[in-house]
Every structure is written in C-alpha cells, then in structure tokens.
Image (cartoon, rainbow, N blue to C red; front, top):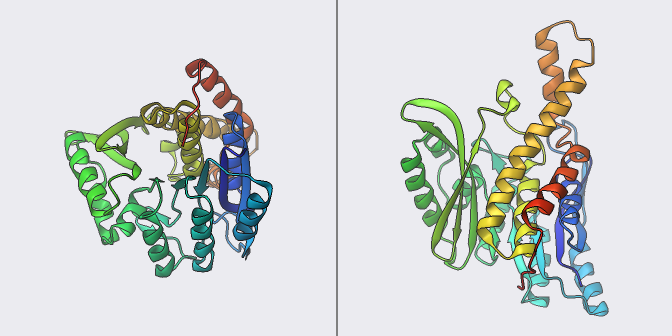
Length: 325
C-alpha cells in the first residue's frame, strides 16, 4: 500500500519539490512514492537552469501500480510545467478514482507568473482544479485561477483582519471551484488599524466552513532582509498539511500544524544560514546581506527542520488515528 504518491520536479541544486516533499512526508510516518514530472539542474531561484521533462513517467507508473495491485490513497501534485503532462494526471485519476487528489499549484508569486510558464499551463491547472479534492494556491495563483488581473495583488496586502476575511471569501468564490473542494489559501498580510504589525493569515475552506490560522512575519529574522521567501516553503506547507490530514483525519489540526511548522522551518533555516554567513569574513554589511540572500536560495535547512517535525508530531499526535479516503 502507498499512502501518498507525489508528482513533482526533481532538482539537483536548491531544496524544493521532491527534495522537500519526500523526506517531510516520510518523517510523518507515511509510505511515500516519488514520481518525477521534470528533472532540473536547479530550482528556479538560480539562473541558467536546464530541465528535462519526464514524459510518460506518470503514465508508466500507473501501469506498474495496476500490474502490482497497488492503489495509492492520495496523490500530491506540484510543479508540472508542461501541458503534455496533464493528460497523464487524468489517466491516473481514471485508473484510481478513489484516490484523493491534492494540487499544490506552482504558477507564480508576488504578483507575477513564473517566466518559464505560459498561459496554456495556467489554463491546464485551472481545468484540473475543478477535478481535484484539495488545492493550496498562494494569492498570485488564486488570482490567476480566478482569471483576475494580477494588479489586484496589491489590494490584498496589509489589510485589517475583517477586510482580509472579506477579500478571502470573495477570492475563493471567484475561483469557482466545486463546493466539495477543500481549499487552503495562503499568504494574506494583515495590519492593525493603520500600522503594519507583521501578521499573516492563511485561510481554509472545507465543507462550507471558512477556517483561518494566523502567523507572525514580523518576529521572523527573514523580515530583516529583502528576501521574502525561502525556496521550498510552499512544498513544505503542502506536505505537512496533506501528510497531517492523512495521519489524523482532522483538517483544522492539519492547517494548524502546517502553519506552525512552516513558520518554525523559516526561523530555523534563517538562523542556521545567518550563523553560517557570520562565520565567513565579509568586508561590508552589503556584501554580507548579498551572501545571506544568495544562501537563502538553497532552500530550507531540512537537516535542522525535519527532526523538529518529528518532535512536533510526537508531542501533538501521540494517539494518531488513520484517515480513510
């Protein structure tokens, strides 16, 4: 039995996609099967990357599963950069109709579509979003899937909590997803009255209910630099969220675990990289900041983070129950 199959990119440099999702979900005690959608020389954080699509890899894996009598409980989809690969996803769903389909779309961030993706991929993911059981877009991706202009992104930043709640509900409605789809909408930033207080909020729509989970960016060391993201954080969030749900069958607990552990992972990674940078003799503060931000592109410090994930689960989910999908 496979608890979770993961269809994502395999990168050599820069921790993201399968480099993050595979060990994270395995740390939760799941039986995980990786399936590469594309092999890349590095993550997109680095210039000059080269990639090789793994055409037919998912389709061939489906045939192997069927021959062996394997029925995965869930499939987590991530970076799938070419339209020709999406027919294989539909074949997977047709072959395993009871498999829970989770989509962590990789389209863009900070109000821009990733440069190596075209509108045809946006349309392919939009079509797929109507089929999946779960989807976790960030604000940019949600706007793209709602066919809203990316200029609206600025209007979703630094909102009061009540206004953020209102905007989140409107954006979820504009995405026009089936009512049964579970949605995690990531990355609203909040203000307190007119003063930026560094808070953030993730939203979660499930069975007609809108849940929310706050986090604190201001207290993170990451806020001290111009770098607003560490590579692989989205993959980590989705892996913890889906992995927790598969273990404990409670979406509210899964959202809390994903939000808290992602915040912890960013803190630990930054502290680890800051210590590494401080150990290097660098002439100016500007050079030190440049070196630090370059190092952040390498992604989450999984060797530091994963043991804390195990500890968190031991403390919070000692008596786990197994979800049935």
